Length: 155
Image (cartoon, rainbow, N blue to C red; front, side):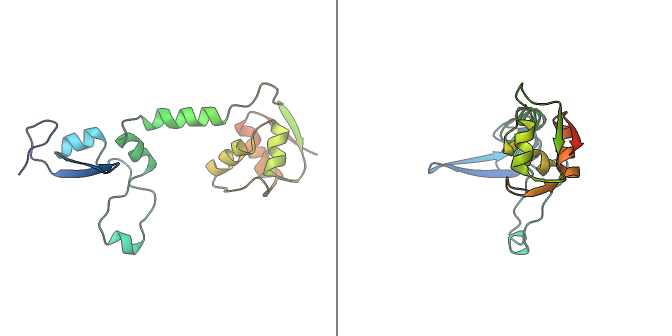
C-alpha cells in the first residue's frame, strides 16, 4: 500500500484524482492528513439528500461549509464577511419607515434605501425565496426591517 503524500508515515486510505484544465493530478493521504486538509467531511452531516439513483453510486456529499474548508478557507469568517457586506445600508438610510399592509420586495427595498437583492438575502435567511416583484405582507417586511435596524410602522 502507498504511503500518505503529506506525512510519509501512515498508509494512504484517501485517494483523490484532480483534473484541472485537462491536467490530471493524483494524490493519496492518510485519514488524519485528509481531515486536516478538509478533504474528508467532518462535523455535521450534509443538509441535503442525494436522489436514490445517485446515492447508489456511493458519492460523498459535502455541505457548503465543508467545501469552503476544503478550499483552505475559514467558513465562519467568510460567511460573516458576506453577511456584513450584504446588510450594509447606505448612510442616507432611514431609521424608521411607514409601510402598507402589502408591498412588493422592490418597494420595501426602495423604502429602506437598499438594493432589492439585500432584501431577498434577508428573506432567504428566514426561508422565504422571493423575487423583486413578489408581494410580501407587513409582518414579513417588518422582519426585514429589524435586520437593518429600521423601525417599521403601519400606514
